Image: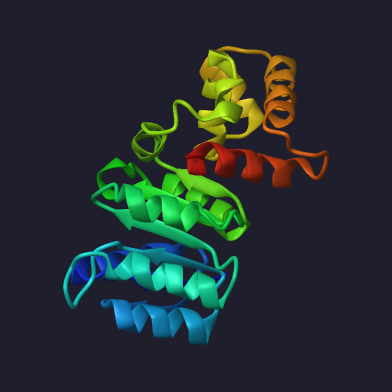
Length: 215
């Protein structure tokens, strides 16, 4: 699996390179600025990108802007944002096209390599991997959204864990529910969000995007 890494801090960038190579990833490019990132994403067309939000030259939002522009040029390009901050506006924009293959993790909340690699593979596969703190910020303004208002408190808990990328089995363990109960909640969520029958993995992504991107 080919990866493009964008991180301005040398030690962290090299650390990501060595970590991902140790897990079998091929590093297509490791860059430190927004313009370099956009060029690498468009030319290399990686399987997934790991992107810091704040990159040179201005250290504001170059990384995320480059990722957004790359996804406009290469629809569905998988992007995992790895940042110290929750940039709510741009995180919402990243989710807005509804294509999935997005993640947003906070650097100080990645606790081991397995967690990070699992999130990266999930995003590369078209899924989502969202830190709970990012989810909380994105949902702060969504409480009045009508489709979401149809969900019960338990269904919202299930959907929030789906947004983190957890499987039904992991959700059942986290909420102390049976697998069948989680399956029933998931089916109810799909129905209440008006998601037509299709591949369940696809509907999970669409449900998560509806949840996170509602206004």
